[in-house]
Length: 96
Image 1 (tube, rainbow, N blue to C red):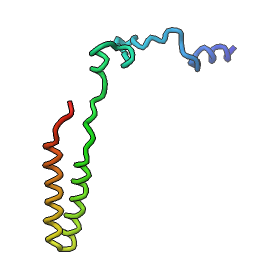
Image 2 (image 1 turned 90 degrees about the vertical axis):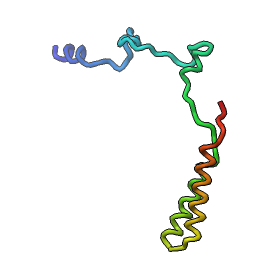
Image 3 (image 1 turned 30 degrees about the horizontal axis):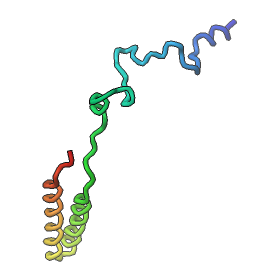
Image 4 (image 1 turned 180 degrees about the vertical axis):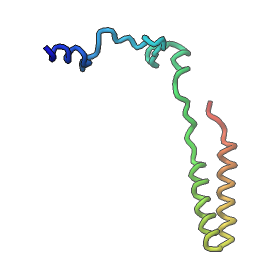
């Protein structure tokens, strides 16, 4: 007797027949379903690849090493590499 009530109260592991994803009013569309320009409007825009972040990352430890060990010519080299990398990265042409 009690087992019949318990089995009706527990949710089943199988999906229900009414698996409507738009029940809450939200529309679900994948990139495969769109056509034309609409299909490209929902893609993720990624920046173009660049080596300048590595140049900036190389200049910062050079600057820090020179600063910690009081080698001021190395501080200047590190700052120049970092600033040159940031400037080149900022002035890099876009690829759109």
